[in-house]
Amino acid sequence: MRKKTEILHNKFGRIDLEKQLAVENFERITLSFYKYVIINDPITLREKLFIEWDTLKVKGRIYIAHEGINAQLSCPKPIWDKFIRSVKSIKGFEDMPFKIAVEENLNSFLKLVIKVKKQIVADGLNENEYDVTNVGKHLSAKEWNKCINNGATVVDVRNHYESRIGHFKGALRPDVDTFREELPLIKEKLKDKKDDKILLYCTGGIRCEKTSAYLKHHGFKDVNQLHGGIIDYAKQINENNLENKFIGKNFVFDDRLGEKISNDIIGTCDQCGRPCDDYTNCNYIDCNLLFIQCNKCEEKYEGCCNNNCQKMYKLPENEQKKIRKARKRPSQTSFKKSIRPQENIAERNINSR
Image (cartoon, rainbow, N blue to C red):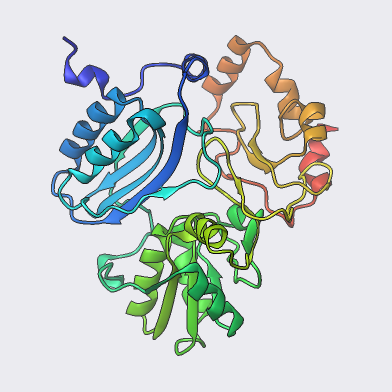
């Protein structure tokens, strides 16, 4: 019998994990869920969930903290009911809302990762700056559209690379890399709108919970948030035949990197400027830069962000390892996660000519 500690982490490399997925004879459901609820012993819960969900072949990324849980994962369809029972059997999770991905049956995650964190969403706030029991009003898609039509202020509570490929028309979209940068910036930009109707939206709703609590704490009177985020909005407009006010793709934090909400393509390839909204990570592992790349440039640069990375990508693996070992920072692009839309493409590739 295996010891518990031997199965509490993934033990396979990417190639082996991809092979395992390739031979699966069942479909998967991609979903997300979160809840702010006091968890007294996050470590024990982490161990319990890993053992249960690893046995069920669940894959995904789950964060647990004293303040709650935040999960994005894929579940085999044949054990869906069993998985739901597993979640709802946990104290405080009995009424857990699940958000099913717009585009299902895709291999969105390769492995199961469950981590204990200080917060389920890093926000950089002090505990006295918000109260998650005092959040904004949750709006259905129909209510949301009506508020937009009536001139409410719409705020995108996501990072710049997310809103770059899709957003609500006319939304305020802060140019930030992280959620912790965004909160004070939103408060500043809205400082003259404390009595106005504010609409907040994000991917699945979790960042709006914290943002709405933060704004209400700082005196904003009419704070509202899109129930279930963009994911649930897409389902509601399809089920109820509502007007779609979201243009483009919804950025998602799994291997898909995006799911189509409308047929509009609002992004452009970072290498040639053609209309494109397909994100990728540079194939050179020491770079891993997140950027938009069209099919033609993917072929030309072999999935890399420039010629330099393409040359390094072609080196034998042992040479790449030596380079990574010799570096003095976490990665070649540790200072930068993604390309910004205003950056000049020529400047990005000037050193690779």
